[in-house]
Image (cartoon, rainbow over all chains, first blue to last red; front, side):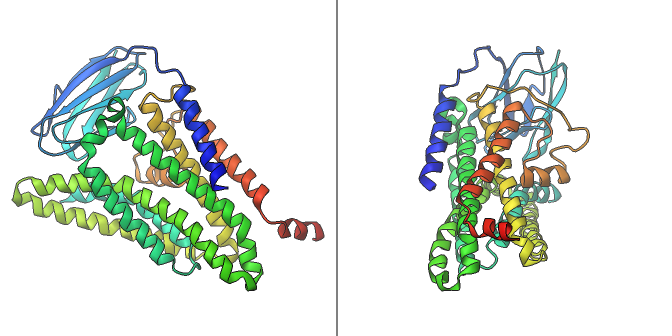
Length: 111
Length: 276
């Protein structure tokens, strides 16, 4: 049984691998995080296009880039850069924050 | 201090629920504490290791290492939970029915315990690595506020353990006859929910782009990050904005579990129904 399930899982992974990668170019948004603040804290992006946040954490401790409305959360270790993909969005305001530090907040405006 | 408490509690909440369920599932199995405890310890240790290498892990797979790692360990947990259910369908009745075979059944039982220990380990690992990173950050920062944050974190941990006990004793109030059916249903929904979470991680990593349209948004009714939303998220995989693929995978896991349990389940029950 175990073997059959493992096989099934492997097949599933193989299928995923074969799936075509996203052709549409993502809009890139670069942020830095230092002294517990996002820089810039207000960003904007066009609607109906996938986005990609590049968050560079310059602080000496890890942070977690999180947003409820964007449906993302990702730990960015100290001194590293994290890439966060976001699907195409409807126009609106989307807040993001550092889950480890509630003082660090920012927002994305999609037009 | 309150902020630290909330952050840590939020992370250990999910692991607490899962450990509580697994404890109830294995209620009568001998040596289960050793296995579950081992799973928790291994998970906590692995969480510290993952936390220490978060930076390196993130850089793998074009920056998508964390997402793929999460998807992979969730996948392992789904397989383990499904295997446990199928195993129980196959051997559960024998264990209850034929006392002569109890010795053998107990030996087999440890296989199923191993599967559940892995599930517990995975749950603790996923939630624990963030706690470890957060507390490490607190410890590394300047002293004064550090202590109060650390105490807040520890209270958060204790509350998480409280959730675990609450879940366990809550489930143990269910009469033994109904407990098996209840835990089977819980484990199946848990597995389906974890599978949809794995899908979400693969979607974020852009590894899975088929059927990625959001089907509905119930965020206004039951936000996923509220306490009720979080509980349902862990227990049945509730998501306020599910994609088509998540729904397909959810239904598939439920169906596959059901079919496997029917196929491998021992015959006596069917006969009993036929006679009745």
